[in-house]
Length: 182
Ligand SMILES: Nc1nc2c(ncn2[C@@H]2O[C@H](COP(=O)(O)OP(=O)(O)OP(=O)(O)O)[C@@H](O)[C@H]2O)c(=O)[nH]1
Ligand SMILES: [Mg+2]
Image (cartoon, rainbow, N blue to C red; front, side, top):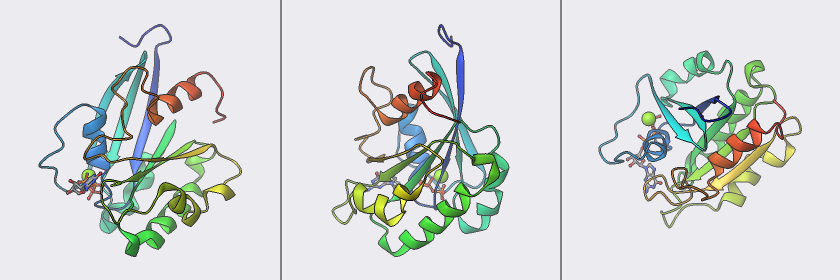
């Protein structure tokens, strides 16, 4: 049941290996988040929320498979970029990958939601610091938002709870109401 509006959204989850994309995907689908192994190809799950069907694609982030990311970018309604907030050594690398992605023609104007994941770790950088490191404020031609979360504990993810104001929900609704340009 797609609800009254029958809207279906294609959401793509990207980010470096070990960022927590698959954990986040399983959280969104209210599944167990233990025993997750690195993703070789991709996973896809459909999550129903507020009358929307969200088709979420989770793509492996290991360096060797990153060249295939672009195959998944067509017709994307929302790009979710996941960052391991405690992996300071790779902030530059993840920033470069994101910058390259946002230059891809298929993602022109597509809204960007950054999850500053692993906030449960004491060494995690705050979301504001990550936003600054990624120069998100310089993005002129797309809506973006950063959300601190822990895919492991579920904090900040919250998509399954009605009226929780979870970021994903907010974005899906904004997009559907035409408030976001894409
Ligand atoms: N502490 C903590 N660990 C997390 C969190 N999210 C994911 N992890 C752990 O990080 C590791 C990698 O998680 P995955 O979900 O497999 O990461 P991924 O981005 O899908 O990685 P690839 O499939 O290789 O691209 C796992 O051991 C997870 O348990 C989090 O919020 N906090
Ligand atoms: Mg994975």
